[in-house]
Length: 301
Ligand SMILES: C[S@@+](CC[C@H](N)C(=O)[O-])C[C@H]1O[C@@H](n2cnc3c(N)ncnc32)[C@H](O)[C@@H]1O
Ligand code: SF4
Ligand code: SF4
Image (cartoon, rainbow, N blue to C red; front, side, top):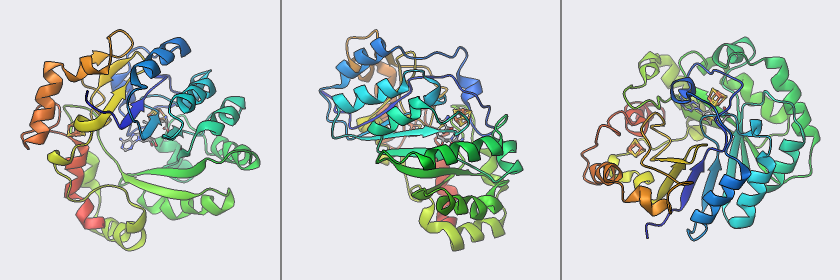
C-alpha cells in the first residue's frame, strides 16, 4: 500500500473573499461544505496511514464550515500524533467555531499580505478594521496551545509592507511570520508576478528577510513528495495530486471510491508520478510553482 504521510484536506470550498493572487474563483464552480458524515468516511479510509502532517484547508475559508471545530476534533481523535495545521483569512468574527477548533490545531496560519489599504487591495472585500478586531479576539482567548503564524504571500506590490505587518506579531502576541513568494496554482498558467520583482526588492528581501522566506531554491521534479506520499482532497471528496495544481481534473474520489489506493492506481496519476520521478514532467506539472520558484529563490535565500 502506498503510504500517505502528508494530507491536505479541504472541508469547505466556500469563501468570503476574492484574493487577487488566489485561483479559487477559477477552480470552484459550485461551493460546498463536506458533511461531517462524509468526513468520517474520509478519515476511515485514511486511518491506516501513518499521517504525520494534516493541513485542513484548500480553496476556501476553513472556518466558514459551520462544524469546522468538529472536523478538527475528529482529525485529532483519528490521528492523535499528527501535526494539524489550518489557515484563516481573519475576516470572520472570532466565534465559538474558532475557540473549539483551536483546541485541536497545532499551527494556525493567519493570512495577511499587506498593510492597511494594500491589504484590502489584495484581499477584496476584506477590511483592515475587521482584521484588527479578529486579532484582538484571538489575543484575548488564551485557552489553547496552537502556534499562531502570519502567512504572508509576497508579490511585487506588497514587499514594502512586510515590516509593518511584522509589527503585528508583538502587538497581538503572535508566534512567527512566514513569507511565501506568490505562486500560480492553475495548470495552464505560469506565475507572471515573478517577473515583476525589481532588483532592489529582491535585494531587500534577501538582506532583511531571507530567514523567514519558505521554499527550496534547488528543488527539482524528483524532489516532489506529493506523488510519493501526499494526498490532496477537495470538499467534494475529489482526489487531486497536490496543492500546486488545484485546477486539474481529479484522479479519484475518496468518498465514493473504495480507498485512496484507487486514485493512486489511476493511469493518469501513475503517468504524473513517473514523469516527476524521471525528471520528465507531464502537462500536470510543467507549470509547477515549486519549479518556477527556483528562478527567484536563489536570489533571495
Ligand atoms: C488557499 S488559502 C486557504 C485558507 C484561507 N482561505 C486563507 O486565505 O487563509 C491557504 C493559504 O494559501 C495562501 N495562498 C493563496 N493563494 C496563494 C498563491 N497564489 N501563492 C501563494 N500562497 C497563496 C493564502 O494566503 C493562505 O495563507
Ligand atoms: S486565499 Fe483564502 S481567502 Fe483568499 S480567495 Fe483564496 S481561499 Fe479565499
Ligand atoms: S505540480 Fe507536479 S511536480 Fe509540482 S507539486 Fe504537483 S505533482 Fe509535484
